[in-house]
Image 1 (cartoon, rainbow, N blue to C red):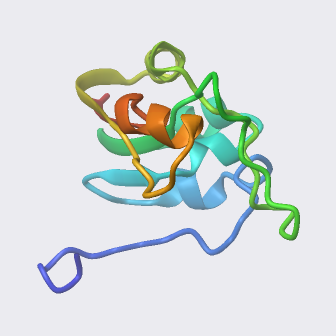
Image 2 (cartoon, one colour):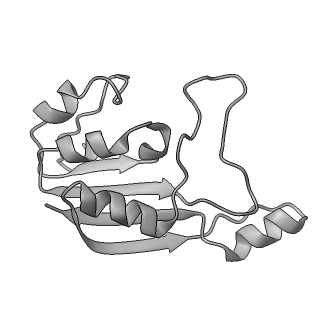
Length: 132
């Protein structure tokens, strides 16, 4: 993105459930949040605090045939939430965002089995473009 002329600002590893200073102080035309909100206990607080008017976010969808992700070696690499699309929509709307576009897609894996077969046809990820 920087090569295309955009200025990129990232968080610095703050616990966004406890420390929203960076979120509140960012001056940007848009915020991207790829695979972040499922790791937060309270994503509503972050979504409400974002001061810019455009948001592009992705989250993994809750799959009935696969448990929520939890790393056994990294205590931070866990999913507190895995959303259904309507739940993430509701969270966005409740925190002041208006959804303009949404898209879901699958994540097939080259392995034999029932779950890999279901992953070919069941959307796993959800992307939303929203505005305040």
